[in-house]
Length: 160
Image (cartoon, rainbow, N blue to C red; front, side, top):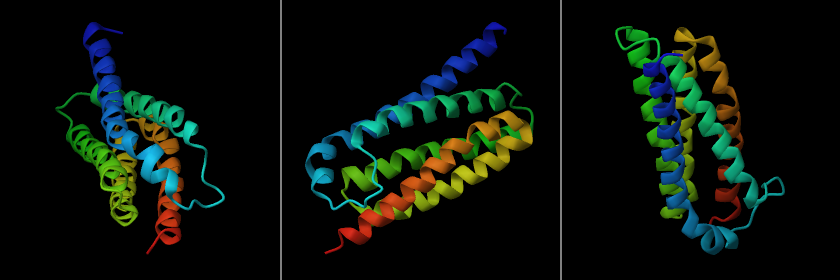
C-alpha cells in the first residue's frame, strides 16, 4: 500500500468515526434522561449495545469509503458515490439530532427514512465501483432497517 492510499484509508476511517462522535454528542445527554422515560418495545436492545455496533459500522463505512475513493476522482461513478456517501453520513448525524437532541421520534422517523434511501443509493453507487465496498455497507443498512423499526415503535408507543 502506497503512502497516498494509507492517508486515504486513515482519512476515511477518521471521517466516519467523527460522524459517530458528532452523533454521540447529540445523543448522549438524552440517554439517561428523556430516552430512559420512553416506553420501549420488547425487542429494544440494551443501551450498552449501541456503542459497539455503531463503532463497528463506522469502521466498515470507512473501509468502504476508502475502497471507492482510492479509484480516483476522475471516474464519474466515484464522484457520484462519494457525494451520496457524504449525504448519507450527514443524514446519519441528522437522525441523532432529530431523535435525541430534539427529542422527536416522529422527526427521527422522517430522517431515518431518508437515511435508509441514501444508504441504499450509496450501496448501489459503491457497488458499481467496488463490489467489496457495496458489501461492506450491508450490515449498515440492516442495522438502520432495525433502527427504523425501533424508531417507529417508539413513536407509536409514546404518542401523546
